[in-house]
Image (tube, rainbow, N blue to C red; front, top):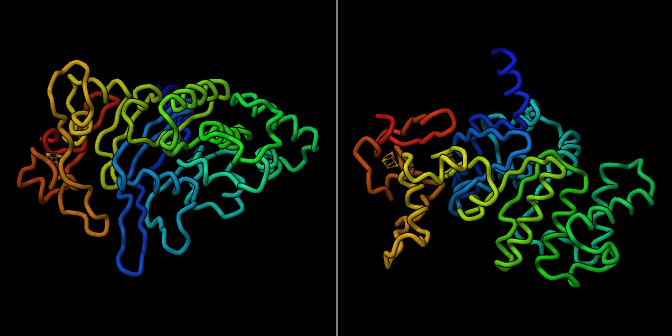
Length: 332
Ligand code: SF4
């Protein structure tokens, strides 16, 4: 039994415990993440799903400690990466961690690449930052290798970003993120800026590379189709909290209990099985993070809201070992 527990602990690469993040602006305090708990295992793809403003990107920036300086603050919580708390690390330790152990792919490849450097130089820079003892020949061999991995002929390393299409630019960004073989890759809406056909190619490629390099991945998206295709584990976020979490089977199994917000997300999707003429979207908007409602943050938009929901924050209902829902409907 003790061996099993140790094995489970060793399997966990990232363990975020009770994370709170706020932005202190001159006008108000914005509560972006409010008690987040997630665990990412080695080798798995973990999906973070939610609307704009749910706190997904803030969570990702917190893991890399890239919150806007002076404004962003982590007042509470732990981000344990391989057992070490990122929140307590020095700037030198963070520089070592970023790129070589944890990498991030941002949404828009246009803004992730430097327009005045060739793509080869940009990938080489990422290698040289973390492997200063490598010779120039070794660096160039690694650049060629990683370009081949993402399906770009190495001869194109002498070209500039503007000579690449959107999909090819995103491949370059992925090459830069993977070149130091990080243990965790955070991909923030990596295909949103791409055409649907290119999206599929890039997702397939990321999936293959993940297998090849055994990298864990946090995939941030609002696209449930991508979640179904890519993820092992899913957390649905709302107003800076995880409101439902489970394996991809728990979340997509319609016969299981679900949070009203999750039901709304699925209701917003067209279905091939039903012939209903209208979708059933979640009405209303995400609450203002500077003025979150009391009780359950979802109550102003929830069709099942009761008086208790307006006053008391819901606890966690555990549905089996892997599935949890944060809602009064189930905690009863
Ligand atoms: Fe709706 Fe109440 Fe559940 Fe919140 S706690 S999702 S308001 S039923």
